[in-house]
Amino acid sequence: MDLLIARIVDGFNNGVVYGFLALALVCVYRGTGHLNLAQGEMAMFSAFIAYALHAVGFPVVLAILGAVAIGFIAGGVVERVLIRPLGHGADYSILLVTIGLFLVLNAGAGVIWGGDPLTFPAAVPSAPDDYISFFGTRLRYQQLLILAVLLVVMTALYLLFKYTRLGLAMRVTAGNPDSARLLGMRVNQINSLGWALAAAVGALVGGLISPSTTLTTGMMFNFLIYAAAAATLGGFDSPGGAVLAGIVLGVLENLIGSYISWVGSDLKQAVALVILLGVLMVRPTGLFGTKKVERV
Amino acid sequence: MSLLRISAMQAGYGAGDVLHGVDLTVEEGEIVVVLGANGAGKTTLMRAVSGMIARRGTIELDGRSIIKASADAIVRDGLAQVPQGRGTVVDLTVEENLRAGAHVRKGKGLAEDLERWYTTYPRLAERRKQKAGLLSGGEQQMLAISRAMMSRPRLLLCDEPSLGLSPLLTEELFASLRQINAELGMSILVVEQNAMIALEIAARGYLLEVGVMGAARPAAEFASDDSIRAAYLGA
Ligand SMILES: Nc1ncnc2c1ncn2[C@@H]1O[C@H](COP(=O)(O)OP(=O)(O)OP(=O)(O)O)[C@@H](O)[C@H]1O
Ligand SMILES: [Mg+2]
Image (cartoon, rainbow over all chains, first blue to last red; front, side, top):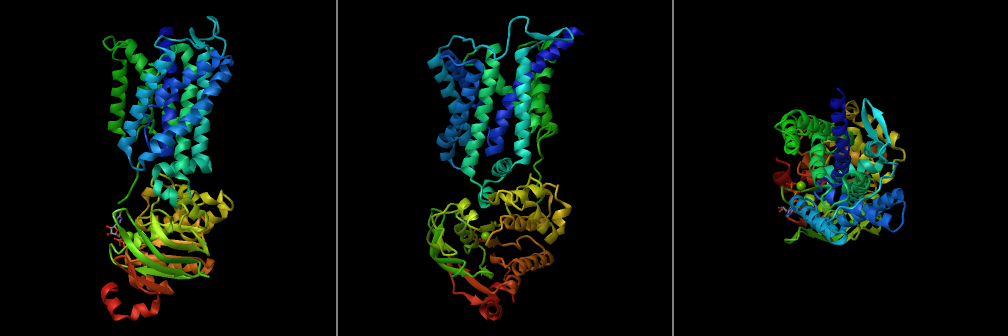
Protein backbone atom coordinates (compact mmCIF):
# COMPACT_ATOMS: atom_id res chain seq x y z
CA MET A 1 0.00 0.00 0.00
CA ASP A 2 2.73 2.43 0.97
CA LEU A 3 4.59 1.52 -2.17
CA LEU A 4 1.53 2.27 -4.28
CA ILE A 5 1.16 5.66 -2.66
CA ALA A 6 4.84 6.34 -3.13
CA ARG A 7 4.53 5.59 -6.81
CA ILE A 8 1.47 7.75 -7.18
CA VAL A 9 3.24 10.60 -5.41
CA ASP A 10 6.31 10.20 -7.60
CA GLY A 11 4.19 10.22 -10.71
CA PHE A 12 2.26 13.19 -9.38
CA ASN A 13 5.45 15.16 -8.89
CA ASN A 14 6.54 14.47 -12.44
CA GLY A 15 3.06 15.29 -13.67
CA VAL A 16 3.17 18.66 -11.94
CA VAL A 17 6.19 19.55 -14.06
CA TYR A 18 4.53 18.31 -17.24
CA GLY A 19 1.48 20.39 -16.46
CA PHE A 20 3.57 23.42 -15.56
CA LEU A 21 5.47 23.39 -18.84
CA ALA A 22 2.19 22.69 -20.65
CA LEU A 23 0.91 26.00 -19.23
CA ALA A 24 3.67 27.75 -21.15
CA LEU A 25 2.58 26.03 -24.35
CA VAL A 26 -0.99 27.08 -23.66
CA CYS A 27 0.10 30.73 -23.28
CA VAL A 28 1.65 30.78 -26.73
CA TYR A 29 -1.31 28.94 -28.17
CA ARG A 30 -3.82 31.27 -26.54
CA GLY A 31 -1.96 34.37 -27.68
CA THR A 32 -1.08 33.30 -31.22
CA GLY A 33 -2.60 29.94 -32.13
CA HIS A 34 0.84 28.34 -32.51
CA LEU A 35 2.85 25.56 -30.90
CA ASN A 36 6.34 26.52 -29.75
CA LEU A 37 8.61 23.46 -29.86
CA ALA A 38 11.46 25.45 -28.34
CA GLN A 39 9.47 26.10 -25.17
CA GLY A 40 11.42 23.51 -23.19
CA GLU A 41 14.79 24.76 -24.39
CA MET A 42 13.81 28.32 -23.54
CA ALA A 43 13.02 27.09 -20.03
CA MET A 44 16.36 25.24 -19.88
CA PHE A 45 18.23 28.34 -21.00
CA SER A 46 16.42 30.40 -18.38
CA ALA A 47 17.43 27.90 -15.71
CA PHE A 48 21.05 28.47 -16.72
CA ILE A 49 20.49 32.21 -16.50
CA ALA A 50 19.15 31.75 -12.98
CA TYR A 51 22.29 29.72 -12.27
CA ALA A 52 24.47 32.51 -13.64
CA LEU A 53 22.65 35.16 -11.59
CA HIS A 54 23.09 33.00 -8.49
CA ALA A 55 26.77 32.54 -9.31
CA VAL A 56 27.32 36.31 -9.28
CA GLY A 57 25.75 36.60 -5.86
CA PHE A 58 21.95 36.87 -6.16
CA PRO A 59 19.97 34.82 -3.62
CA VAL A 60 18.15 31.82 -5.16
CA VAL A 61 14.69 33.36 -5.20
CA LEU A 62 15.89 36.59 -6.75
CA ALA A 63 17.96 34.66 -9.29
CA ILE A 64 14.84 32.75 -10.39
CA LEU A 65 12.73 35.90 -10.52
CA GLY A 66 15.48 37.61 -12.51
CA ALA A 67 15.50 34.73 -14.97
CA VAL A 68 11.70 35.00 -15.21
CA ALA A 69 11.95 38.72 -16.02
CA ILE A 70 14.69 38.14 -18.58
CA GLY A 71 12.66 35.26 -20.04
CA PHE A 72 9.61 37.49 -20.33
CA ILE A 73 11.52 40.10 -22.31
CA ALA A 74 13.40 37.53 -24.40
CA GLY A 75 10.14 35.74 -25.25
CA GLY A 76 8.65 38.97 -26.57
CA VAL A 77 11.81 39.70 -28.55
CA VAL A 78 11.84 36.22 -30.08
CA GLU A 79 8.28 36.74 -31.32
CA ARG A 80 9.16 40.16 -32.70
CA VAL A 81 12.37 39.10 -34.44
CA LEU A 82 11.81 35.48 -35.49
CA ILE A 83 8.09 34.86 -35.69
CA ARG A 84 6.36 38.07 -36.72
CA PRO A 85 8.35 38.58 -39.95
CA LEU A 86 6.97 35.26 -41.19
CA GLY A 87 3.52 36.80 -41.34
CA HIS A 88 0.13 35.48 -40.32
CA GLY A 89 -0.89 32.04 -41.43
CA ALA A 90 2.70 30.80 -41.86
CA ASP A 91 2.03 27.87 -39.55
CA TYR A 92 4.61 25.46 -40.93
CA SER A 93 7.37 28.04 -41.23
CA ILE A 94 6.73 29.01 -37.63
CA LEU A 95 6.97 25.40 -36.51
CA LEU A 96 10.29 25.09 -38.36
CA VAL A 97 11.61 28.29 -36.81
CA THR A 98 10.80 26.97 -33.35
CA ILE A 99 12.75 23.81 -34.15
CA GLY A 100 15.67 26.00 -35.24
CA LEU A 101 15.40 27.96 -32.03
CA PHE A 102 15.42 24.68 -30.13
CA LEU A 103 18.74 23.69 -31.70
CA VAL A 104 20.34 27.10 -31.26
CA LEU A 105 19.42 27.36 -27.58
CA ASN A 106 20.53 23.82 -26.89
CA ALA A 107 23.89 24.27 -28.59
CA GLY A 108 24.29 27.77 -27.17
CA ALA A 109 23.81 26.64 -23.58
CA GLY A 110 26.33 23.87 -24.19
CA VAL A 111 28.90 26.34 -25.50
CA ILE A 112 28.39 28.83 -22.68
CA TRP A 113 28.00 26.52 -19.68
CA GLY A 114 29.67 23.33 -20.89
CA GLY A 115 28.32 19.83 -21.08
CA ASP A 116 28.78 18.80 -17.45
CA PRO A 117 25.77 18.89 -15.12
CA LEU A 118 25.73 21.89 -12.80
CA THR A 119 23.92 22.18 -9.51
CA PHE A 120 21.48 24.91 -8.66
CA PRO A 121 20.27 25.20 -5.07
CA ALA A 122 16.62 24.82 -4.07
CA ALA A 123 14.60 27.86 -3.09
CA VAL A 124 13.47 26.24 0.17
CA PRO A 125 15.34 24.12 2.75
CA SER A 126 16.21 20.80 1.20
CA ALA A 127 18.38 18.93 3.64
CA PRO A 128 17.64 15.17 3.79
CA ASP A 129 15.07 15.67 6.54
CA ASP A 130 13.24 18.63 4.99
CA TYR A 131 10.04 16.83 4.08
CA ILE A 132 6.52 16.14 5.24
CA SER A 133 5.51 12.52 5.76
CA PHE A 134 2.48 11.48 3.80
CA PHE A 135 1.31 7.86 4.23
CA GLY A 136 4.88 6.78 4.58
CA THR A 137 6.02 8.81 1.59
CA ARG A 138 8.14 11.92 1.67
CA LEU A 139 6.82 15.14 0.23
CA ARG A 140 9.88 17.33 -0.06
CA TYR A 141 9.51 21.04 0.55
CA GLN A 142 10.76 21.88 -2.93
CA GLN A 143 8.12 19.65 -4.48
CA LEU A 144 5.41 21.28 -2.40
CA LEU A 145 6.74 24.66 -3.47
CA ILE A 146 6.54 23.68 -7.14
CA LEU A 147 2.98 22.50 -6.67
CA ALA A 148 1.98 25.70 -4.88
CA VAL A 149 3.55 27.93 -7.51
CA LEU A 150 1.92 25.88 -10.24
CA LEU A 151 -1.51 26.34 -8.70
CA VAL A 152 -0.98 30.07 -8.39
CA VAL A 153 0.18 30.43 -12.01
CA MET A 154 -2.63 28.22 -13.29
CA THR A 155 -5.28 30.20 -11.43
CA ALA A 156 -3.80 33.49 -12.58
CA LEU A 157 -3.85 32.38 -16.21
CA TYR A 158 -7.37 31.05 -15.89
CA LEU A 159 -8.56 34.38 -14.52
CA LEU A 160 -6.62 36.27 -17.18
CA PHE A 161 -8.18 34.38 -20.07
CA LYS A 162 -11.65 34.16 -18.64
CA TYR A 163 -12.26 37.52 -17.04
CA THR A 164 -9.96 40.20 -18.37
CA ARG A 165 -10.10 42.41 -21.42
CA LEU A 166 -6.55 41.46 -22.29
CA GLY A 167 -7.21 37.74 -21.95
CA LEU A 168 -10.26 38.02 -24.17
CA ALA A 169 -8.19 39.91 -26.74
CA MET A 170 -5.62 37.10 -26.65
CA ARG A 171 -8.31 34.52 -27.34
CA VAL A 172 -9.81 36.53 -30.19
CA THR A 173 -6.35 37.04 -31.68
CA ALA A 174 -5.60 33.32 -31.55
CA GLY A 175 -9.02 32.39 -32.91
CA ASN A 176 -9.35 34.94 -35.71
CA PRO A 177 -6.52 37.46 -36.14
CA ASP A 178 -8.30 39.39 -38.90
CA SER A 179 -11.35 39.90 -36.71
CA ALA A 180 -9.11 40.95 -33.86
CA ARG A 181 -7.65 43.75 -35.99
CA LEU A 182 -11.13 44.83 -37.06
CA LEU A 183 -12.04 45.14 -33.39
CA GLY A 184 -9.11 47.45 -32.78
CA MET A 185 -6.86 44.91 -31.09
CA ARG A 186 -3.11 45.36 -31.47
CA VAL A 187 -2.51 41.88 -32.77
CA ASN A 188 1.28 42.16 -32.94
CA GLN A 189 1.61 43.26 -29.34
CA ILE A 190 -0.76 40.53 -28.22
CA ASN A 191 1.29 37.89 -30.02
CA SER A 192 4.44 39.17 -28.36
CA LEU A 193 2.75 39.11 -25.03
CA GLY A 194 1.74 35.47 -25.48
CA TRP A 195 5.35 34.53 -26.16
CA ALA A 196 6.60 36.67 -23.30
CA LEU A 197 4.19 35.12 -20.81
CA ALA A 198 5.03 31.62 -21.99
CA ALA A 199 8.76 32.23 -21.67
CA ALA A 200 8.27 33.62 -18.16
CA VAL A 201 6.26 30.58 -17.10
CA GLY A 202 8.93 28.33 -18.63
CA ALA A 203 11.68 30.17 -16.75
CA LEU A 204 9.80 29.58 -13.53
CA VAL A 205 9.61 25.86 -14.30
CA GLY A 206 13.31 25.73 -15.17
CA GLY A 207 14.42 27.52 -12.03
CA LEU A 208 12.23 25.41 -9.78
CA ILE A 209 13.04 21.96 -11.15
CA SER A 210 16.78 22.30 -11.79
CA PRO A 211 17.68 21.50 -8.15
CA SER A 212 16.18 18.02 -8.54
CA THR A 213 17.06 17.27 -12.17
CA THR A 214 20.50 18.92 -12.08
CA LEU A 215 21.20 21.53 -14.66
CA THR A 216 21.99 20.12 -18.10
CA THR A 217 21.24 21.15 -21.65
CA GLY A 218 19.03 18.09 -22.04
CA MET A 219 17.03 18.59 -18.84
CA MET A 220 13.85 19.77 -20.56
CA PHE A 221 13.76 17.49 -23.51
CA ASN A 222 11.61 14.73 -22.02
CA PHE A 223 9.47 17.23 -20.21
CA LEU A 224 8.59 19.01 -23.44
CA ILE A 225 7.28 15.80 -24.99
CA TYR A 226 5.09 15.17 -21.97
CA ALA A 227 4.05 18.80 -21.77
CA ALA A 228 3.02 18.80 -25.41
CA ALA A 229 1.04 15.64 -24.72
CA ALA A 230 -0.54 17.24 -21.65
CA ALA A 231 -1.41 20.42 -23.50
CA THR A 232 -2.96 18.39 -26.28
CA LEU A 233 -4.91 16.23 -23.87
CA GLY A 234 -5.97 19.30 -21.94
CA GLY A 235 -7.29 20.87 -25.11
CA PHE A 236 -4.52 23.44 -25.67
CA ASP A 237 -6.64 26.38 -24.67
CA SER A 238 -7.46 25.44 -21.11
CA PRO A 239 -4.92 26.10 -18.32
CA GLY A 240 -6.73 23.87 -15.82
CA GLY A 241 -7.10 21.12 -18.39
CA ALA A 242 -3.40 21.20 -19.25
CA VAL A 243 -2.34 20.91 -15.62
CA LEU A 244 -4.79 18.14 -14.82
CA ALA A 245 -3.79 16.24 -17.95
CA GLY A 246 -0.12 16.64 -17.01
CA ILE A 247 -0.73 15.17 -13.58
CA VAL A 248 -2.86 12.31 -14.88
CA LEU A 249 -0.17 11.55 -17.43
CA GLY A 250 2.58 11.57 -14.80
CA VAL A 251 0.71 9.25 -12.44
CA LEU A 252 -0.45 6.81 -15.12
CA GLU A 253 2.97 6.66 -16.67
CA ASN A 254 4.63 5.89 -13.38
CA LEU A 255 2.08 3.27 -12.36
CA ILE A 256 2.16 1.50 -15.69
CA GLY A 257 5.95 1.66 -15.77
CA SER A 258 6.17 0.18 -12.26
CA TYR A 259 3.51 -2.50 -12.40
CA ILE A 260 3.64 -3.77 -15.95
CA SER A 261 7.06 -5.32 -16.02
CA TRP A 262 7.64 -5.38 -19.74
CA VAL A 263 7.00 -1.62 -19.95
CA GLY A 264 9.58 -0.76 -17.28
CA SER A 265 11.25 2.61 -17.46
CA ASP A 266 12.34 2.23 -21.07
CA LEU A 267 8.88 2.25 -22.58
CA LYS A 268 7.39 4.86 -20.23
CA GLN A 269 7.43 7.54 -22.91
CA ALA A 270 5.65 5.26 -25.31
CA VAL A 271 2.92 4.93 -22.69
CA ALA A 272 2.38 8.66 -22.75
CA LEU A 273 2.06 8.60 -26.51
CA VAL A 274 -0.38 5.71 -26.44
CA ILE A 275 -2.55 7.52 -23.90
CA LEU A 276 -2.38 10.61 -26.06
CA LEU A 277 -3.41 8.80 -29.23
CA GLY A 278 -6.17 6.97 -27.43
CA VAL A 279 -7.72 10.15 -26.10
CA LEU A 280 -7.42 12.01 -29.36
CA MET A 281 -9.17 9.22 -31.20
CA VAL A 282 -12.15 9.53 -28.88
CA ARG A 283 -12.02 13.28 -28.38
CA PRO A 284 -10.11 15.18 -31.06
CA THR A 285 -10.21 18.41 -29.05
CA GLY A 286 -8.62 16.86 -25.98
CA LEU A 287 -10.29 16.17 -22.67
CA PHE A 288 -11.11 19.74 -21.72
CA GLY A 289 -10.59 21.80 -24.85
CA THR A 290 -13.29 23.84 -26.40
CA LYS A 291 -14.79 22.00 -29.26
CA LYS A 292 -14.28 23.72 -32.58
CA VAL A 293 -17.88 24.34 -33.39
CA GLU A 294 -18.97 25.59 -36.72
CA ARG A 295 -22.21 25.32 -38.55
CA VAL A 296 -22.10 25.54 -42.29
CA MET B 1 -17.82 68.29 -44.10
CA SER B 2 -18.47 64.67 -44.93
CA LEU B 3 -17.99 62.05 -42.24
CA LEU B 4 -16.12 59.84 -44.70
CA ARG B 5 -14.44 61.22 -47.78
CA ILE B 6 -12.58 58.95 -50.17
CA SER B 7 -10.88 60.47 -53.17
CA ALA B 8 -8.74 58.91 -55.91
CA MET B 9 -8.13 55.86 -53.74
CA GLN B 10 -6.32 52.91 -55.27
CA ALA B 11 -5.95 49.55 -53.59
CA GLY B 12 -5.16 45.93 -54.41
CA TYR B 13 -3.25 42.85 -53.40
CA GLY B 14 0.27 43.27 -54.69
CA ALA B 15 -0.34 41.70 -58.08
CA GLY B 16 -1.86 44.98 -59.29
CA ASP B 17 -4.65 47.31 -58.29
CA VAL B 18 -8.21 46.09 -57.95
CA LEU B 19 -9.60 49.57 -57.33
CA HIS B 20 -8.54 52.26 -59.77
CA GLY B 21 -9.32 55.61 -58.25
CA VAL B 22 -12.42 55.49 -56.07
CA ASP B 23 -14.33 58.62 -55.01
CA LEU B 24 -17.03 58.28 -52.39
CA THR B 25 -18.53 60.24 -49.50
CA VAL B 26 -20.76 59.38 -46.57
CA GLU B 27 -22.48 62.21 -44.71
CA GLU B 28 -23.16 62.18 -40.99
CA GLY B 29 -26.28 60.10 -40.25
CA GLU B 30 -26.59 58.81 -43.80
CA ILE B 31 -26.93 55.28 -45.20
CA VAL B 32 -24.96 54.81 -48.42
CA VAL B 33 -24.94 51.66 -50.50
CA VAL B 34 -22.32 50.48 -52.99
CA LEU B 35 -23.69 48.03 -55.52
CA GLY B 36 -21.55 45.71 -57.56
CA ALA B 37 -21.41 42.25 -59.06
CA ASN B 38 -19.21 39.39 -57.87
CA GLY B 39 -15.57 40.38 -58.05
CA ALA B 40 -16.29 44.07 -58.66
CA GLY B 41 -14.07 44.98 -55.71
CA LYS B 42 -16.64 45.64 -52.97
CA THR B 43 -14.78 43.70 -50.29
CA THR B 44 -11.51 45.24 -51.45
CA LEU B 45 -13.08 48.68 -50.91
CA MET B 46 -14.16 47.79 -47.38
CA ARG B 47 -10.78 46.34 -46.45
CA ALA B 48 -8.95 49.33 -47.91
CA VAL B 49 -11.03 51.80 -45.90
CA SER B 50 -10.55 49.87 -42.66
CA GLY B 51 -6.80 49.60 -43.18
CA MET B 52 -6.64 45.85 -43.68
CA ILE B 53 -4.88 46.13 -47.05
CA ALA B 54 -2.45 48.60 -48.62
CA ARG B 55 -4.02 51.64 -50.27
CA ARG B 56 -3.09 55.02 -51.73
CA GLY B 57 -4.96 58.26 -52.27
CA THR B 58 -7.16 60.13 -49.79
CA ILE B 59 -9.35 58.73 -47.03
CA GLU B 60 -10.60 61.15 -44.41
CA LEU B 61 -12.74 60.33 -41.42
CA ASP B 62 -14.34 63.52 -40.11
CA GLY B 63 -11.71 65.58 -41.89
CA ARG B 64 -8.73 63.66 -40.52
CA SER B 65 -6.64 61.55 -42.89
CA ILE B 66 -6.59 57.85 -42.03
CA ILE B 67 -4.67 56.74 -45.11
CA LYS B 68 -1.56 56.01 -43.05
CA ALA B 69 -3.34 54.71 -39.95
CA SER B 70 -3.21 51.04 -38.95
CA ALA B 71 -6.37 48.95 -38.80
CA ASP B 72 -6.55 49.02 -35.00
CA ALA B 73 -6.04 52.80 -34.88
CA ILE B 74 -8.84 53.27 -37.40
CA VAL B 75 -11.23 51.39 -35.10
CA ARG B 76 -10.24 53.68 -32.26
CA ASP B 77 -10.94 56.63 -34.57
CA GLY B 78 -14.55 55.44 -34.78
CA LEU B 79 -14.85 53.18 -37.78
CA ALA B 80 -16.21 49.65 -37.33
CA GLN B 81 -16.47 47.00 -40.01
CA VAL B 82 -18.66 43.91 -40.28
CA PRO B 83 -16.57 41.78 -42.63
CA GLN B 84 -17.97 39.58 -45.38
CA GLY B 85 -18.60 36.16 -43.86
CA ARG B 86 -19.17 37.84 -40.46
CA GLY B 87 -15.84 37.11 -38.76
CA THR B 88 -17.31 35.98 -35.47
CA VAL B 89 -14.97 33.93 -33.29
CA VAL B 90 -16.63 30.55 -33.36
CA ASP B 91 -15.25 29.06 -30.14
CA LEU B 92 -16.09 32.07 -28.02
CA THR B 93 -19.56 32.55 -26.62
CA VAL B 94 -21.98 35.12 -28.01
CA GLU B 95 -21.36 37.34 -25.00
CA GLU B 96 -17.59 37.02 -25.25
CA ASN B 97 -17.80 38.07 -28.90
CA LEU B 98 -19.80 41.11 -27.89
CA ARG B 99 -17.39 42.01 -25.09
CA ALA B 100 -14.53 41.71 -27.58
CA GLY B 101 -16.36 44.27 -29.71
CA ALA B 102 -16.01 46.79 -26.88
CA HIS B 103 -12.24 46.28 -26.74
CA VAL B 104 -11.33 49.81 -27.78
CA ARG B 105 -13.64 51.32 -25.17
CA LYS B 106 -11.84 49.61 -22.31
CA GLY B 107 -15.10 48.32 -20.86
CA LYS B 108 -16.87 51.59 -20.04
CA GLY B 109 -20.68 51.27 -20.17
CA LEU B 110 -20.31 47.64 -21.19
CA ALA B 111 -23.36 46.26 -19.39
CA GLU B 112 -25.66 48.92 -20.83
CA ASP B 113 -24.49 48.29 -24.36
CA LEU B 114 -24.86 44.52 -24.01
CA GLU B 115 -28.44 45.06 -22.90
CA ARG B 116 -29.05 47.40 -25.78
CA TRP B 117 -28.00 44.87 -28.42
CA TYR B 118 -29.76 42.01 -26.66
CA THR B 119 -32.91 44.12 -26.89
CA THR B 120 -32.37 44.83 -30.56
CA TYR B 121 -31.66 41.17 -31.29
CA PRO B 122 -33.50 39.06 -28.65
CA ARG B 123 -32.24 35.87 -30.29
CA LEU B 124 -28.74 36.76 -29.20
CA ALA B 125 -29.94 37.25 -25.64
CA GLU B 126 -31.34 33.73 -25.56
CA ARG B 127 -28.02 32.35 -26.77
CA ARG B 128 -25.62 34.54 -24.85
CA LYS B 129 -23.76 31.61 -23.27
CA GLN B 130 -23.63 29.56 -26.47
CA LYS B 131 -20.59 29.27 -28.70
CA ALA B 132 -20.93 31.63 -31.64
CA GLY B 133 -20.16 28.76 -34.01
CA LEU B 134 -23.47 27.16 -33.11
CA LEU B 135 -25.55 30.12 -34.27
CA SER B 136 -27.43 30.10 -37.55
CA GLY B 137 -26.16 32.29 -40.39
CA GLY B 138 -28.69 34.99 -39.63
CA GLU B 139 -27.89 34.99 -35.92
CA GLN B 140 -24.19 35.21 -36.69
CA GLN B 141 -24.83 38.25 -38.87
CA MET B 142 -26.79 39.86 -36.03
CA LEU B 143 -23.90 39.05 -33.71
CA ALA B 144 -21.38 40.53 -36.15
CA ILE B 145 -23.36 43.77 -36.43
CA SER B 146 -23.87 44.04 -32.66
CA ARG B 147 -20.23 43.28 -32.06
CA ALA B 148 -19.17 46.06 -34.43
CA MET B 149 -21.63 48.43 -32.73
CA MET B 150 -20.17 47.58 -29.31
CA SER B 151 -17.20 49.78 -30.21
CA ARG B 152 -19.66 52.72 -30.41
CA PRO B 153 -18.44 53.69 -33.88
CA ARG B 154 -19.26 56.86 -35.79
CA LEU B 155 -19.39 54.95 -39.06
CA LEU B 156 -20.43 51.34 -39.60
CA LEU B 157 -19.21 49.41 -42.65
CA CYS B 158 -21.19 46.30 -43.65
CA ASP B 159 -19.90 43.91 -46.28
CA GLU B 160 -22.77 42.00 -47.90
CA PRO B 161 -24.89 41.39 -44.83
CA SER B 162 -27.40 39.45 -46.95
CA LEU B 163 -24.87 36.78 -47.90
CA GLY B 164 -26.31 33.31 -47.37
CA LEU B 165 -29.51 34.55 -45.70
CA SER B 166 -33.07 33.78 -46.70
CA PRO B 167 -35.08 36.67 -48.20
CA LEU B 168 -37.09 36.93 -45.00
CA LEU B 169 -34.03 37.15 -42.76
CA THR B 170 -32.39 39.61 -45.14
CA GLU B 171 -35.49 41.78 -44.85
CA GLU B 172 -35.32 41.58 -41.06
CA LEU B 173 -31.65 42.39 -40.97
CA PHE B 174 -31.93 45.45 -43.19
CA ALA B 175 -34.86 46.63 -41.09
CA SER B 176 -32.58 46.47 -38.07
CA LEU B 177 -29.89 48.46 -39.89
CA ARG B 178 -32.49 51.09 -40.70
CA GLN B 179 -33.51 51.11 -37.06
CA ILE B 180 -29.90 51.55 -35.89
CA ASN B 181 -29.58 54.45 -38.31
CA ALA B 182 -32.83 56.08 -37.20
CA GLU B 183 -32.43 55.63 -33.45
CA LEU B 184 -28.74 56.33 -33.07
CA GLY B 185 -28.19 58.51 -36.11
CA MET B 186 -25.58 55.96 -37.11
CA SER B 187 -23.87 56.53 -40.45
CA ILE B 188 -23.69 53.31 -42.43
CA LEU B 189 -21.82 52.31 -45.58
CA VAL B 190 -23.08 49.00 -46.91
CA VAL B 191 -21.91 47.07 -49.97
CA GLU B 192 -24.38 44.62 -51.47
CA GLN B 193 -25.21 42.51 -54.45
CA ASN B 194 -28.80 42.38 -53.31
CA ALA B 195 -29.50 45.81 -54.75
CA MET B 196 -33.26 46.03 -54.26
CA ILE B 197 -33.30 45.67 -50.53
CA ALA B 198 -30.20 47.77 -49.97
CA LEU B 199 -31.59 50.67 -52.01
CA GLU B 200 -34.75 50.59 -49.91
CA ILE B 201 -32.91 51.74 -46.80
CA ALA B 202 -30.22 53.90 -48.43
CA ALA B 203 -30.28 57.59 -49.23
CA ARG B 204 -27.67 57.41 -51.95
CA GLY B 205 -26.04 54.71 -54.00
CA TYR B 206 -22.89 54.09 -56.01
CA LEU B 207 -22.24 51.49 -58.64
CA LEU B 208 -18.85 49.77 -58.63
CA GLU B 209 -17.93 48.07 -61.90
CA VAL B 210 -14.70 46.06 -61.95
CA GLY B 211 -12.74 48.50 -59.87
CA VAL B 212 -14.24 51.70 -61.27
CA MET B 213 -16.70 53.64 -59.14
CA GLY B 214 -19.61 55.42 -60.79
CA ALA B 215 -21.04 58.75 -59.62
CA ALA B 216 -23.29 58.99 -56.58
CA ARG B 217 -27.02 58.96 -57.26
CA PRO B 218 -30.10 59.13 -55.08
CA ALA B 219 -31.23 55.62 -54.20
CA ALA B 220 -34.68 56.16 -55.73
CA GLU B 221 -33.15 57.09 -59.06
CA PHE B 222 -31.13 53.86 -59.07
CA ALA B 223 -34.16 51.77 -58.41
CA SER B 224 -35.94 53.21 -61.41
CA ASP B 225 -33.00 53.10 -63.85
CA ASP B 226 -33.70 50.47 -66.48
CA SER B 227 -30.11 49.46 -67.18
CA ILE B 228 -29.45 49.04 -63.47
CA ARG B 229 -32.67 47.14 -63.05
CA ALA B 230 -31.61 44.77 -65.78
CA ALA B 231 -28.14 44.19 -64.40
CA TYR B 232 -28.60 44.25 -60.64
CA LEU B 233 -32.20 44.14 -59.66
CA GLY B 234 -33.12 41.03 -61.59
CA ALA B 235 -36.07 42.67 -63.28
N1 LIG C 1 -6.64 38.21 -51.11
C1 LIG C 1 -6.66 38.46 -52.43
N2 LIG C 1 -5.54 38.32 -53.16
C2 LIG C 1 -5.53 38.58 -54.48
N3 LIG C 1 -6.61 38.98 -55.17
C3 LIG C 1 -7.77 39.12 -54.51
C4 LIG C 1 -7.85 38.87 -53.10
N4 LIG C 1 -9.12 39.10 -52.70
C5 LIG C 1 -9.80 39.46 -53.82
N5 LIG C 1 -8.99 39.50 -54.88
C6 LIG C 1 -9.38 39.88 -56.26
O1 LIG C 1 -9.86 41.20 -56.24
C7 LIG C 1 -11.00 41.34 -57.08
C8 LIG C 1 -12.14 41.94 -56.29
O2 LIG C 1 -12.50 41.06 -55.24
P1 LIG C 1 -13.50 41.46 -54.08
O3 LIG C 1 -13.47 40.38 -53.07
O4 LIG C 1 -13.20 42.83 -53.63
O5 LIG C 1 -14.89 41.44 -54.85
P2 LIG C 1 -16.35 41.59 -54.29
O6 LIG C 1 -16.99 42.67 -55.05
O7 LIG C 1 -16.34 41.71 -52.82
O8 LIG C 1 -17.00 40.19 -54.71
P3 LIG C 1 -18.09 39.29 -53.96
O9 LIG C 1 -19.42 39.84 -54.28
O10 LIG C 1 -17.90 37.94 -54.58
O11 LIG C 1 -17.78 39.30 -52.51
C9 LIG C 1 -11.30 39.94 -57.62
O12 LIG C 1 -10.79 39.89 -58.93
C10 LIG C 1 -10.53 39.03 -56.72
O13 LIG C 1 -10.08 37.90 -57.42
MG1 LIG D 1 -17.06 40.65 -51.31
